Length: 462
Ligand SMILES: [Cu+2]
Image 1 (cartoon, helix red, strand yellow):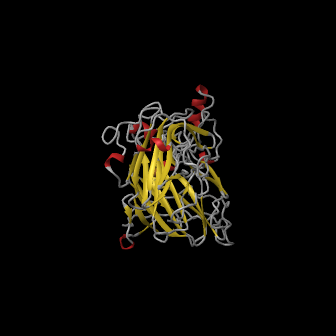
Image 2 (cartoon, rainbow, N blue to C red):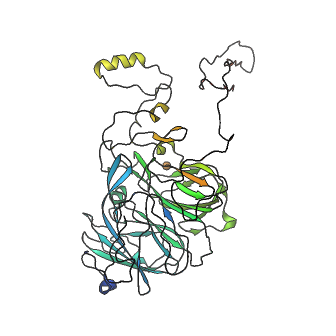
Image 3 (cartoon, helix red, strand yellow):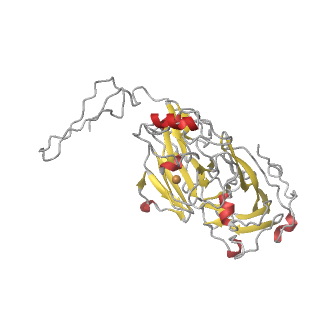
């Protein structure tokens, strides 16, 4: 549950237990910091004053409540250690903000004056950098360069005017390698002052992040540079990532930020979409082009839009296939085509529990119940209405449905396909053997495919 004491009322002077406050805000008091450990998408936070806007839905997350103090919109972030469930069956000990990693999404309106209190409850100093935002240099949050670090126990205030609408991020600019590897990051959405400009019906946000957590352990290895083993959206891995419920006919925006150490080609099935915003601002209509995959560079945000006119369960995932896998087994040798029976017998004399994997591919892993260390996710997992999905990591589903209510973000369940619209098995016929002759036709060499890949169905000849 989100605690909103001090935010729903009009009281403007609720003192938190935080230590000294620097700067001009001292006399006004620090607003209480709402916190939550809920790990499912919270209902978007509708604007209650000021210009109207369509609030965003944060996958497996929430929007930070604020209070008005005079004409300042005040927020309170608390940097602190958190426990995040990566997916059912695995918790990670991370650092984040207000009870979660990533931190809550901050939403405000172009032209707003914002004051953001940041309290440091970490064991080391930190700062907050407002990635992509146009602001006075001294509010940019680069520890040592534009401000002194926020020491443990201290609270700092950041104050600036939101000059331009768009999608931005926040993260520390202090011991960055460690603090971002531990999960410290969040989204900052600035809605246009004109409620009609770039209006959509549904607006989803999530950050791409990655962790290196050994099977059976809880803490990310912060020195890892490239070889991460958990690829996550908002610090959640499939099948723990919220699905995106969409009403048929909605204009939908999906905003994705990348704060990992590598690029991610984000691919969505079923639609042709256009990038309408980067962290540098809105893309003019004449500068857009259609896409089905957008590559997200490191330290960048891309927002894309489409009109949801085709119902279904449409996959949305990173197209690097190892990024739709969880930890475990990336160092398994390739055994496709290698008969392992004799080998297994020999190894089992030494190691009775030894299992052979992968003579026919790895799909068997998707259904397998393997003994695993505690607090470990299967490498390939998750079930849909037709069977195992054999996925992990950065994978979720956009669920386009007819007749959802405007503000309904509940999971509508699996898509009920109209009759005759699902790929189907064709009655078996004997497999013709494939004959291939060299182009010259001189050699009589004949290749027979003894065991085609598909069994029991129609066998395609190449
Ligand atoms: Cu990826």
